[in-house]
Structures are given as structure tokens and as C-alpha cells.
Length: 517
Ligand code: ADP
Image 1 (cartoon, protein in one colour):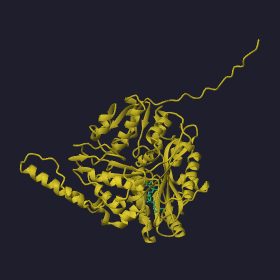
Image 2: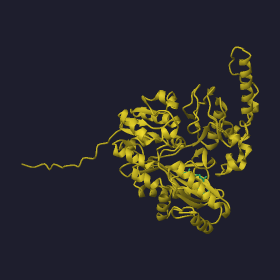
Image 3: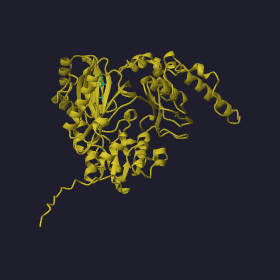
Image 4: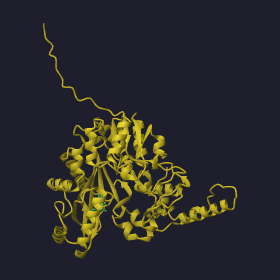
């Protein structure tokens, strides 16, 4: 009798698809995650502070747990409170979004200990790649160009002097755990170094609970280019091309686009290779972004963001890949189902961050109540926002209120659509960055793709003054208020017939040539 050999196959670990998650964030990103969860059949529980308990994400979530009152420290940044909320709602996983606890390895480790799936990297990989000093050292080891500066954390002002002398002024002091441009000081002259170093340390302690700072040569006219990455738990690594994020204020992004206009094929390849190398070196899984500064056609690695970025939609638009859903599936131990070869990009996408900020007052936050809201739509326009009429933007958190994303076959078409969208969009109740973006889109330097990281700063009031449309709408709002006060019946919002002529942004000869169909 012939024996058939039984092959005993080792069973692959079962995919642990996520069925329920706590969304430990707020605003547009909370909504974005809940939407992704819904599409994946995941039960989403929103952890919301009292200030956010009636917000749009709270209305859309399957369930809401209150984090109680107070600012970020007592709510979204309270590790214990978030873990408690996850236990209370019996979820399997926690999605931290961006900001708050998303890049805190103690939090991610705590989730592991509590048997909760952290939707993001392992604590170990986050500890490595999320630390700017570790990441730069590793980059150097892998022969990836980095900006000249300290090799390690700078111990004191005396050491800072020595390094600054070696690399030459101006220099930049940066917090090792930094983010959002905090804990950064530009130093032009040795006499300012000591105070700048001490105040950067102080700000880093306050913001990140860690005073570790390092020092770099301050590049005069760089562009910010970053690579979107994703990797799964089986070691498969994919890149989703680059984004250009040079439009910034105070080292924080205001407008992002993909692809990057002025990147040669060779430079793109070198940044992609560097990013793959770093992801592999840290045994990283999840989504992340490798950031570079490009100066005179050379790319220098600056840091890795170990989470989903605010600007992820522009990459989604040009690749058709849902990055938020991918992050959740990877955390659920699913395998990336596409090869690198299958990742294709098409067209051009731009994102404008609409913040509750007054560009005229140095982009100071302007929280307030939404009195009137008109959101743009139509071909090629996507809006990620948690705003709704009557909603009050709390003064406790970040000032980002909406992201308008325009997609076109070419950059010209994307700009054109964005101009149309920002013309349609109305947020009345508090100043926003809308007029700033309308001015920026009309600026020839931006249109030619020649901006750099300090372009906005250098332009001064040319970009921050209200535009014609803003002034017109201001007058209209005042007239409506007056009519109300005089006890007239409320009227609809009239659009003056001559408004088309006053749009400084539409109808350039270049746009009239744009292919329309
Ligand atoms: P954060 O983590 O706080 O966002 P990053 O290291 O990502 O800080 O840098 C944010 C921005 O700061 C960059 O996009 C760039 O505009 C500016 N920046 C950072 N390092 C340098 C540098 N060495 N020279 C010039 N600008 C820099």
C-alpha cells in the first residue's frame, strides 16, 4: 500500500483583522479615520473631550466615550484616560491619528502591554525612527546625506558653540523629540546662541517632556520634499512617491502638493532608496513619511514622521491608494496586496490647509463660531473637514479646520480647480487662511513652482492682506448684520453681479488655454 506523504505545513499566524477601534483624536482626522473604519466594517468609538462631544466626528462615530473636560493635557494627551476609554468601550485597537499621542512610544508600548492593537508602528520602531537623532545617525550609517551639524544630542551651550563654529552660522537648534516646528531656534550670530539654546531646551521640555536638542546648519533656501512610505508586518516595503511641502509659516506647512515639480528622476530615486533603507533598518511597519530638505539639487534627510500626515490626501489622489485604510489593515496584520510595480501615479494634487488663523496678525489663532458655511465641490475637489454650521471652533486645540484638495491632470489644472474651489468656499464667523491661499495661488513664483520654505515669510504682507473677495464679503456681512439689526426679514446671500470682474485670481491668459473637458 502506497503511503501518501502528509506534508505538515506550518500554519501562518491568523490575520487579526480589526473589528473595533477607539479613535483617540478629534477634528478632521477623527472624521477621516471613522470614515475609513466604516468602509472596512470596523466599529468606531470616538474618544471625545467635552468641547468636542457635539462635533461632527462624534455624530458620525458608532459610539462616543467622553474624555471629560479640559485642554489637550487632560484629554487627548492623557495616556491613562485614553487607555481607560479603550477598556471601557472594549475595543480591540486604538487609532491615534496625528499629533497628540501618535508619536509617543510610551503610549504605543502601553497599548502592547494592555493587549490593545496600536494602529501604527511597534514601540521599538517608533522609539528609533521617531527620534531625530537616532534617525540621522542611522541615515549617516546608510550613507544617506544629512545636514552638517551635531552627531548627537548637544549637552550644553558650550558644546553648541563649538559645533556652530565648525558648521558656520546661521545654525538651527532643534528638539530631538520635536514636531510642528516647536523647540526650534534659528541663530544668526554667536552672541544669540546661548539664550536660543536654553530657550529651545525649555520649549522642548514643555512640549515633549524631553529637553534633548541638537544642532544643524541652517540652509538658506531649501525646499521641503517628503516620501510617503508604508510597510507591513511581513517586511514588505512600498513607497507612494513624493510630496512637496515648501509653503510654510513658522516651519509649519500651509499647502502641499504631489508630485514635486522640480525633482529630477535621479533625486527622486535617491530619496526613495534612502527611505526604503531607513524603514528596513528600523524594522518598521505601518505608514510613515521620510522628510528631506532639497538644496541645490541635493536631498538631505531630516526626519521621519511615524504616523499618518495631515497632507496624506494629495498622495491618495495621485495614487488612488487609501493611506488611512492601509494603516489600519497593516495594524490588523494584513499583507500589502500590491507590488511596488503596481503603484502608479497620475495627475497632480494640491492641498490647502484652511486654519482658523488671521494671516494679518502673524497667523494668530482665531477660534469662533461658524456663522455661515459653504463648502466647495465639483470635479476634482475633495474637502476634509469637521466644520458644520453653528459649530464653535474651541480655543483649546489646533487651528486646522478644513483641508481643500484639488486634483487635475496637470498642475495647471489642479491650481485652476483650487482657485475655483476657494472662490466658492465661505466660512463666516472668524478669520481663516482662505484669503491667504487665494493670494498665494495667484502669485507667479508659486505658479512657476519656484517657492521655498521661507517664501511666505519673505513675501510679508503681499500674501497676508485680505484679497478683494474677502473685503467684499466683509462688507456684505456687515450689511447683512445691519439689516438684521434694523429688524428686516433675513435675506439670502446675494452675489453681486460684477463679482466675476473683481476676482483677482481667475481668467489669466494661461488659464484660458487650460484644457477643459
Ligand atoms: P518638525 O518636526 O518640528 O516639523 P522638521 O525637522 O520636520 O521639524 O522641520 C520643519 C521645517 O523646518 C522644515 O520643513 C524646514 O522648513 C525647516 N528646517 C528644518 N531643518 C532645517 C535646516 N537645517 N535648515 C533650514 N530649514 C530647516
